Image (cartoon, rainbow, N blue to C red; front, side, top):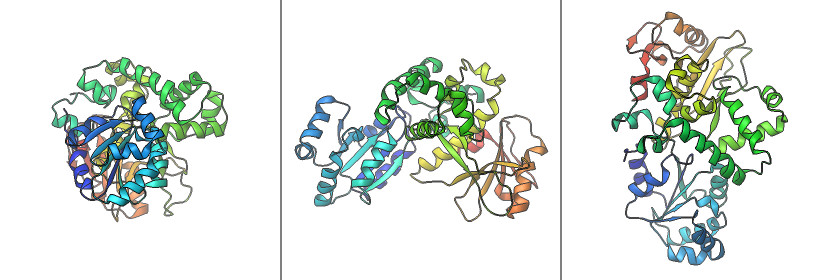
Length: 385
């Protein structure tokens, strides 16, 4: 098993909270992590029809059968259980009583917020990080291969062919999970919509254009995007609106939580296709931003990420507001350094007053450099922090 960075943090939280709630995409390794980390806990999955029926029809009997130190997987399948769980947890009031897991963020968090607010630590698990694969000696030795394979554990555990795996993943996701989150009549049209989203990675999200191309209304686009975000397929990066410059772009950008899944949606069938694909730069940018999100979530932390662009096209790909002074990153997939890489960073720094040690270019090359403009950081070094 690949050691997950989040494991020790889960144990720390279980010493402080009566309930731990773990969410994340389907097949990101939640169940495996929990059963390994909490090896002495009981385990029940509410995907099991009999157990789900038990929890729904006799919740008190269910909690009497599983009174403490239990992992409840796919907990969102029985939202009515959470009120009884609240009463039971308040009565016993000891740390580490339950670990809840689920793949549907909206459904799970709606139940958690209604019944377990203040009683649970909420953590998220994405597929393998670059550092986790590196530590397990399973890391692809080429950036294009890493983009193409993505990070889902089963691909590495079973040595599966990525294109086939992601085709099945999307088919299962659309036919099963989407129906649970929202009643979407035309699933073929929804699949087309997801593919169109993949073609817009790293771009400003033009909802009207997306609606026109897919043949749906703007409200439907917004509703379907919320479905994709709730199930950890994609996310938006909001623009930075600080007032040190006028005419700032105020439209978010669209990204996917896994580049392998995005490659499949783009009909990319091999790493060699990645190397020449028009979206390679955007896919690399997506992978770098994902690594920042994974780094935060693997430490059970949140992170405030934004981008900056003005009306003249000056841009910084990523701003990380986790300290008093934000860190700014330009992301370039090229392997050869160019001084022009710092152009957007310099423009932003002149307006914001940020020092050069807060400016970095993450690129696809091998050499790290400290310059008067900022730091040049290879992807391999950046992703292993």
